[in-house]
Image (cartoon, rainbow, N blue to C red):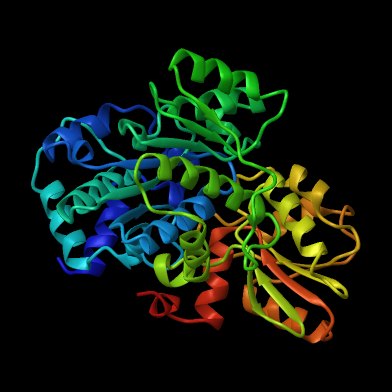
Length: 414
């Protein structure tokens, strides 16, 4: 099979949370352990940084990868979901996995008789491990897929773990309270492995403290006095403090990722990782920002950041997946903004009629569109040079937006 046929088969053959949502979730480590055994346990040949949490995982993972690339490490980066092409999920120093490797790996899966039914995510993670091992990566940044304790990535023993924060997301799977979700995410804390906590609060800290004590793991807390590079704005400041704390630890065990290297990593972030769509300023006059914030906590942080930049009226182009807690999200949306609600091309998109019914009278200035393109054009027509246009709400909305206005963004990467 060629690459396009292989990817089509991969999405059809195995459940994919990317498309199906909660029905594709496959908790537990049995499948990934059997896959790992078949491929010769490639994770045992690699060193890892394991990044979990509700919001900020992608930002922290990509920034770390960029900094370590600048320190001349061979950096494997595993993240999800992808915005345009499957290969974005698996990168080495910013370069996506080779399509031929994807084809050959999937052929091995197809030609073997399995006693398990691995998920799309499990297959993808094992593909990443095999690719990183074969290419002799010196460090791998692994972003947790969902939760932590039962996530497929949890077969690794990292040099350091990260839990960015805790919010109410994926409650159908991880639990309906922050305490339940924190307990699942604390599952990535390993014996004698330091853990960086990006958020300290009275509710969840006892969960992490208990887990760390049981594992004799040291808790590392970001320094609020961390010097922030000028390119870092808004909620990314908190993410950078987390990254800086990880780097401080890595320096103690022999890595060369001091302050100057960190600044270079930030400056070359997109080139080193292909990272975009997070607090990304697309243009000015009017100011256009794209961001993948998709749950109440993330959106609240985004709105706080945008308010410090906006000089005029705020125009929000928004859509969400059908399984998100829209009631909670509506409560954190700014009442004075103009909203352009829309749908996106992925099958998980909320229906426009559902958006109309759920928003009801809670949003004063709202217009509804069947496509992001029409929503964006309407916002452009209404905005003046001092205004801000914010596109946010889902990875899939950002995908559709970039696909129309900035085709082939991967050409900007290495």
